Image 1: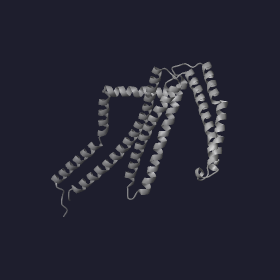
Image 2: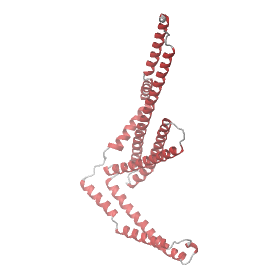
Image 3: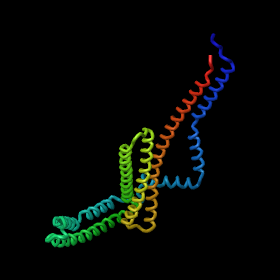
Image 4: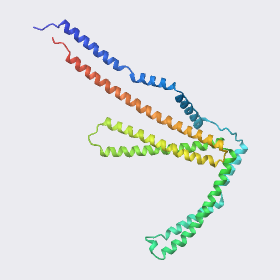
Length: 304
C-alpha cells in the first residue's frame, strides 16, 4: 500500500526550497557593480582624483585635437616648405654621402679572413679606410649643416604652429606603435613557448595565462614607449629653438598628452579584461550554486 506524504515533511521541503531560491536569487545581485559604483563615487570626491581627471582631459585635447596657437600664413608656409626642400637637396651632402659609401665599400673589399695578419690586405685596408674616414668626417659636417638649416626652418614657423603639433604627434604615434609591436611580439613568443611546453593544462587556465601575459606586455611596452617619446620630445623641442618658457610648457603638455593617451589605452584593456573575468566568474559561480541547489533538492525530497 502506498504511503501518503507527510504534511510536515512537505512543509519542510517547501521551506528548504524557498531558502535555496532566496540564496540563489541573492547571488544574482550585482554586488560587484554596486561596489565599483561606491568606490568610484568616493574617488570622484577626492581633489587629487579631480585634478588627475582634469590633466587627463587636457592631455587628450592637446595630443588629439588642439590646433596650433601660432597662425601660419600661406606665404609663411611656402617659405617654410622652400627652406625644407633646400635643406633636403643639398648637393654637398649627397656628394659626401656617395663618396663615403663608395670609399667604405672599397675598404670592405680588402677585409678578407684574418686580414689584420696578412699582407698586402692589412696595408690596403689601412690605406682605403683612411680615405673612407676622411669622407665620413666630411659627411658628418654636411649633416650638421643640413640639421642647422632644418632648425632654421622650424624656428621660422615656430613650436606652437600646426607644424610643431603635427611633429610631436607624429613622434608620439611612432613610439606608440613601436610599443604595441613589442607587446604583440612578446605575447606571440610566449604563446608559442606555452603551447610547446604545455602538458595537461586545461584550456581555461591557458587562456587566462595568455591574457595576463598580454596585459603585462602591453603595459611594459607602452610605458617604455612613453619614456622613449619623452626624450624624443625634448630633442624635437630644442630643434625649434624656442624660448625657455615655451620649451618647458610644450614639453610638459606633450608628456601629459602622451601619458593621457597611454593611460586611456591601458585602462580600456584593463576594463575589457576585468569585464571578461567578471562575466566568466559569474557564470562559473552560478553553475556551481545551481548544481549545489539541485543536489540539496534531491537530497531533501520527501519519500512517498
